[in-house]
Length: 393
Image (cartoon, rainbow, N blue to C red; front, side):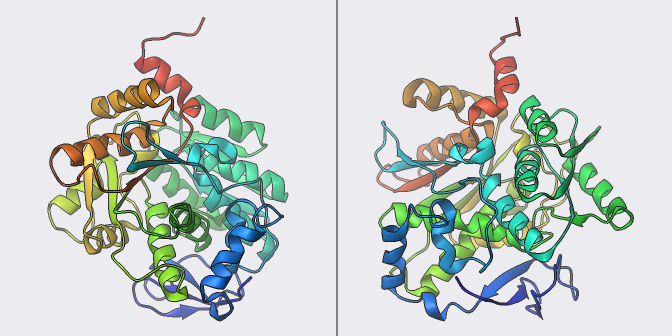
C-alpha cells in the first residue's frame, strides 16, 4: 500500500501535509486531493496481481485497489466490487449496480474510506449533512469504527435512510429544509460541538473511496475505457473520483493511452444547477431555488465541487443534462419490467438520460456505455410506492 506524499489543492495546487486531519485548502478553500508515492504500483504486473489476489482480506471489494489507497487498516463492511450488469436489450450498455454495497448505495465507498482515516487520525465525533444515503453509510461505518456520528438530513428523506441511521446508533436531526440547510447547521455548530465535518468534498478521503468505481469499471471491461459514463449527480463526488482514477491509471500504465470516456452528469429538471450552468456555458453553477424531485439524492441546490464537475464534463467531451421526474419514473418502470432490476430514482435518471442521448443522436447504439445505479430501489420503497399509488395495509 502506498504512502501519502501530501494533499494538493485542486484550485491553487498548494500542497498540505496529510499528517493531521484536513478539510479544505487553507489558502483558497479549494477541494484537496490525496497524492501518493505510486512508484511501487507502476506497470501491468502490479495491475494484474490485483485480480489474482482478490478474495483474500483486505483485497476483497474496493480494497483490492490497496496499491492506490492509503496505507492504513481499513474499516470495512465488504464495500465495492459491485456487479457490472449487461443490458438484455443492448449488449453495449452496462449497469454498474452500486445497490449491492453495504447500506445499499455507492455512499458506502466514500464513507468507508473517510471513516477509516478518521479512526487513523483518532477523531471521535463526525458530522454530515445528507440527502439520505450518506447518512446511513456514515452511521454504519461509524458504528463499526466506534466513532460518534451526528447526522442532519431533510425531514422528508426516504424512511429507510432515517430508520437505518437511528438503528446504527447515530444522533439524527431531521431538518425542515434541504441538504444545504443541513450543511449550514453543521458548519455553524461543528466548532462548539467538536465535530469533524465529513461533508462531500469538505475532506479529501470520500473522493478516494469513490474513485474505486473508476478502477472497477475499467477492470471489469478488460482494462479498457467505455465510450461514456452516465453518473447521477447531486454532489458529484463519484464523478470527480472516477476522473481522478483515470488520471492515476494512466500515470501507472494500467490503461492503454487513449480517449477517456465522455462523462455524463445527470440531474433532475426539478434541481439542475449543474445542467443549467453547462447549458449556459458558465464555469460555476448558481444555487437552485425551490429544489424539488423524488430522486432525493439529486436534490442538491449547489454542489461544492460544481466547477470541477463542469470542467470534467467539458474536457471529456461529455454533457450535463436534466431529465424530468416523470421521464425518470417511466425509465425506472421500464428497467424493472424489462431488465428485472429495480433502480433507485437516481439510477433511473441515468437510464433515462441514456435513452435521451441515444434518441437525439449524441450516442450510437454501438457505443459502449456504463450507467450507474447508485442505490438499491428498495431503499426508496415508500417513494416508489407513492408513485405507484400503493398504500400501506
